[in-house]
Length: 197
Image (cartoon, rainbow, N blue to C red; front, side, top):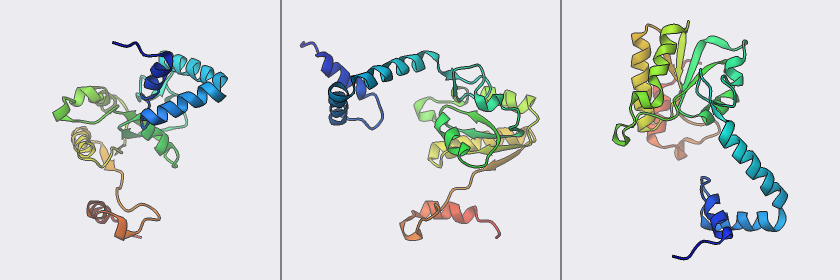
């Protein structure tokens, strides 16, 4: 077996990034080596530090390097509302809106075929929040995939059993979208979620 050169190892290491195939990894490696070695060294230090120090918030489970993330530490957030999302990147998306409540990050979704059950996505921790926090509303913001919908349904049953209000974010026609380009399932969701104006 022929041992890989350091350049080949660099190319393979870059392929761990989403959307980066062999050709893209080669271009990145050559660009860094040819034009930006200092930037690459800085990137490698930051990545090593981030992988070592970033963990999950003890309350909402998003990424943080502290026990609690900056959102959970913020005393001006609305403690009566919690938004349940699948991934930390979903928190970033919702933060771009005017939402000012709390979060719970599942770090995935239910997928029995893949062996992912309620405990694997932290629903035991979520149950503790339901039982011990003074929540008025739980907003389900899981994806509109089959797994996301199943996860939302499962959680909604938990929330209803606790006697708290549960809502689901609307799914439908995107702003600026034309109906002729939207699939029928999306239009059906939009019709089901219609509201008075």
